[in-house]
Image 1: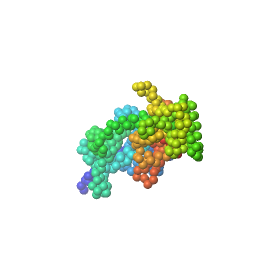
Image 2: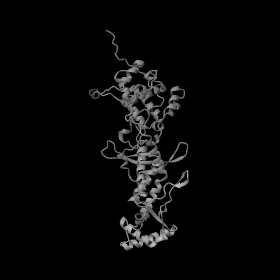
Image 3: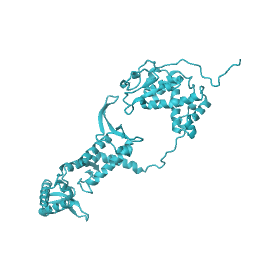
Image 4: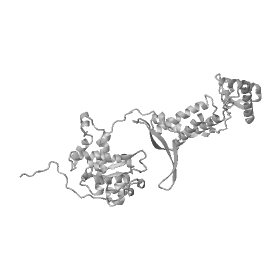
Amino acid sequence: MADVRPLHPYAPAIEEKYLIAPETPLRHLIPGGADLELDQSFGEEVWDLAGHRSWTAKAGGQTTFDFSKLSPRWRVVAQHLSVFQMNPQLVNDLAPEVPMAQTWARSQEATKPVTSQGNLKMLLHATAILDRYHLTTFDEDTWDRVVSLLITPQSKEEKRDGAILSAGTGRGRAQQLSAFWEVTHIVGRTDLLGANAPFGGRETTELYERRGPRNSVRPDDAVGQMLGFTGWFIDHALEDIVETIEWWSSNAAAEPPGSQQGNYDAMLDLLCRIAADNNGDVPGVRNINGGLTLAHGALGRLIGEFDADEAYLAGRWAMRQLGDQVTLSEDLSPCPVELTTIDTPAGLQTWTRRLLPVNSELDLWQRYAIYACMFYLSATLMLRDSQLSCLPLNAITTEPLERPDGTTVDQHTLKAYRTKNRHSPVPTSVVVSSRTARIMTLLQRLQKALG
């Protein structure tokens, strides 16, 4: 009887090698493992990392690492790979004499479980292709073939549609094969992917060309300059604007006196008090003809008269009574809020002369402030307009965070909602800078002051 030779011979069975004992608790291997809800060991084929602090938006089966989907020959090394990605320094402790382990500990940055989970999915697809085409020996020609296979559709649906997987998908799968190869050298299983570096040692960016930028038009330099200016404006002017609006909101009379003569008397009394406190000066503004006149509209708010015509009549009557006893000033405001001073070539000056609630002053700066805040938030938070439009009240929470060196800093968290591809907004959270936290706090105060 003739000898039968298999067309696709597999490598001989080799006893598994463990750097990490199968019974080792996962809690001891993964940073933040003390928070895990389940007691699991390294050797289990399905890990559930529910309870880990980084799973804030995950639930149910989305927190699992399912190694049982891998072919048995890949599983143990894949488990080591996932742990080493989340805890790179562990490699040095387990294999201090292995050169590849030293390289891994220096070059690999620790990943969160969600990133390691995504890497495992990429590895699953890549190794499934190796199994599908019975690739067991890896030389230069084999790796060249793998480059093509990684972006070749494998399902009937993809083949029927004539789809070609993206270069980004190819890079992701190739990167995990390269990382897997490194771990095979650390664990001592070079029989899996061979002794020589995958893809001839080429970088994955060389294997799959990056797609050109979708927006080839470079933003104008003024965009960056505007971002810098809005940051400066927020730091120096925003709080002054909000405090001034709060003062005018809380000091405005709820209702007018009730009669025209009552308006006249209330305006006269108000001007007398302002003049007495400011050496005879009262607030003035420029009219449409350029002349200096009493700030009737702004002062009318303080007596409860929000009708511009009625406030004008009351102010004109009061000024006739006072005559030359008062002087109009373009720099005076009854609001006691002190404006921030800035260093200029001419010395220290306030960033604006005053903030009266008129079209050319506070009303205008209020609109500027809102536009500046929304521009800054859109540019730095990477939230969509639909997400910014549904930010909740009291969106910022601040709690102390202890650094590894023992120092403590404030960590600001923004509560937001995810809206893309969702029937209704889904709660999420984003860690933000102190400036962003300040913006959100001041915008909330502004909204409350405006009612």
